Image (cartoon, rainbow, N blue to C red; front, side, top):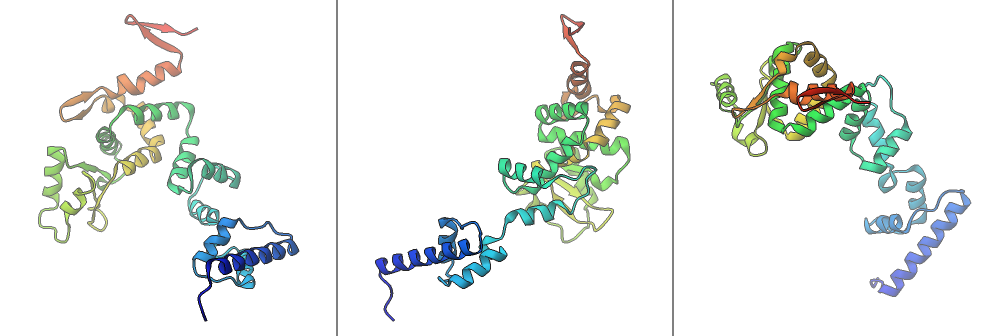
Length: 263
């Protein structure tokens, strides 16, 4: 059979489109967009109205709503206040189908106003290397989590030596392959002995996920978080960042080395 010319193909597409519209009207269904019909045809699925309507009514293939997969992923996690479908759809409208981003947003929403303010300032004012150092201070001070929670900064001489010393004699671990994508490494020596790279986004996500615990320990043991030292550059974290937020939260500001209560 000779291949259809452009006009013949156009006529067939228009006829296909018309029959789909009639089938949808009969079923009192919303009519699919021309873009979806084109996508269906371009996937080589043919122009069989019955097959099209089967897929369209059952929402399979290209008609599957990605929201279902998004919701299924979100539902794997436990929440103190489970997010509604309306909240999920609002997030998707603003940010797309980013499950990880949605979980972070929900975590931050669960924090108290002061926790949110200190977290926001911490993420805004510290570099990724400083965030990793803050996390390590928390791991060491709190002793809540195992030592394999420590994040090694391979740009830090001590961290680099400590990790290589720990890995001495271990086979099957290619550190160089990891370092091609990130300088941050986590060594799971208490479980399977594997080594994994940690991206900037991973580190930010860790700080967000555990901020309630971190916040509590900074409040209880502030001197342990006084200084964050990266490459001998000291950042007075507690005084200049964390406590500065608390002071402002309580309605005080510093002016000419004097504490002034805001009216």
